[in-house]
Length: 94
Image 1 (cartoon, rainbow, N blue to C red):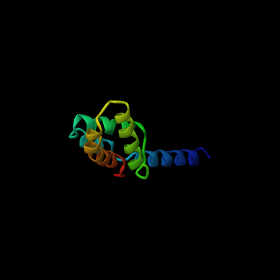
Image 2: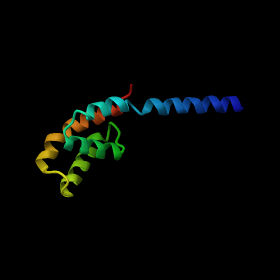
Image 3: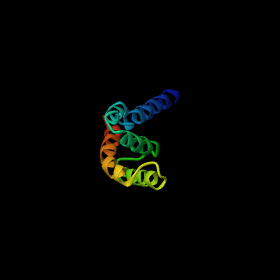
Image 4: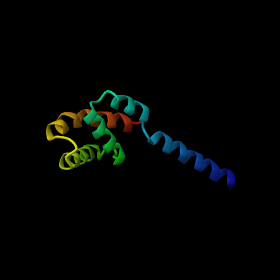
């Protein structure tokens, strides 16, 4: 019984590790973004999106930053897509 539980636990841990995507590649991509792009990237990652919710999450985070006076609307429009692409890289399976 203990052995079976251990095997199940190890399998679940393995699945969780692969489900994280490629954080290093996403962060490397983000290092090439502008300062505003890095802000949008960080805010989006902190919101913990999935590939299915990425577009709405980026839009929501960028809009919140504009409304909060942190970035301009033009900066948000110019940097949201590149930031989203880096988040997408981070979320994609290896």
